[in-house]
Length: 111
Length: 479
Image (cartoon, rainbow over the protein chains, first blue to last red):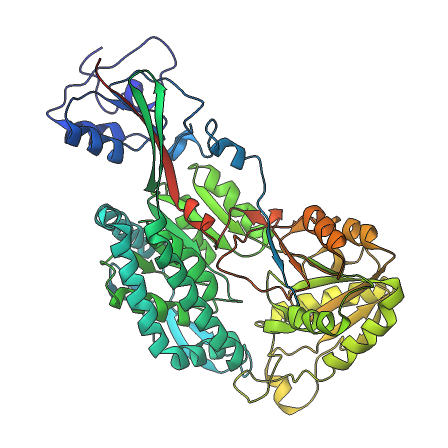
């Protein structure tokens, strides 16, 4: 669908089915601002051949994961997890182990 | 009156309300501060939100320069700040100066970590696809600080938050806002852009609740009691906020039969009676091997009888007053409960008598033996100068009893045997274990509790991780 208003449910909520709203944006800045206008922050992606644009999107998209010119594929090599209302903690990557261990500081005094 | 700081400006509360700050040793008024309303806090969050974009874009090393400048200014004002801290909190001058220095060290520690912030790179996830793991600041952070170490515990939150590029709204404790306001003022003066660091003193209801519930605040760093920590965690869940919670503790100390008794006695005394026992990290349960029990207790008693109790500003005072009357009441209730369960009071167990003592919330350093494990001094956190001492047969019994607590903050063991020391370090359920050492916090090691003592770490290089988000970036290249 096109022309979905920003306050409609397909924009505000998570749509868990075969529905895709498509929006027109003037430039990358507007794209990022609108992409970030969500309580969610799980995945995101940007398609461009321009290095500066790719770098800006990777930095500024509020999401735990950004794909550049790529499908959203999860890799065991990379930590996966959301920001904002999409969650906390990470699975995958060596980072995931940290979330299943407690860290203890031990100080030993020697004579 | 000392005003609060929002967006780099000194301000009164919107409705003009103020709170008087009293000296716990004399009951005299030290100063007053604004009692921030909800709309004042919202204004501070607005300021922190607007400042985030600029501050997070500055390179970490340059953010650190501001902290170094602030550390320098703090050193110059060390004595004035220490006196103010002693007056509002009650702690002896000697301990107040240590706390100012600790704050400076912590600020410098995090400034030093600024250049170590780095991410990761995965060369080939797939053909023509590589990965980067980058770190980004979280956003607006709320820092909620208690009254026992108002300044050093503020540093543990400000340091990592600011270096990582976050902006902050501080809620100081209701009874100890003065030194914190001065510290925030010095950091602003050192060059923080307006709005990066704000401070709004006031009630938990007006200030704390607003910070915890506002969806723009993305992280809460809190040090305080376990019940309040649980409330914050629950409230933070409504907006899926990140939390670092440094909560209560009931640290066990185990003294084996091969320990250096002199050193262990001294560590038990300092570990329990520093800051009049009002510390999350303090020796709160002492387990001593049967065979050395009597000798150990006799030596400890000799030491405790020499501790001078009085006004923190007086020369030679080691133990100041409890911070508030209700704090003393809680200690009195816990001791009464222990006695009811059969405990014997070796010394203390009451308020000191005579002239000056009547003006403040004083309580004598107290040692208890024959303590029932079901009494409150064992099962609850005791936030005052009271130490229960229990007999154990061996290390296994000591560890088992030490672990029989909802808390898991600090712990210590005294032995000359390497295997015993290793066994204890591995098996004590706590975020920190000291071996043959007083419980001293080092910036170099991560600090944070297990079980109901908290979530997340402060200090170490680990603290920074709790003020940054990790982002995975996958880049595909053309064929």
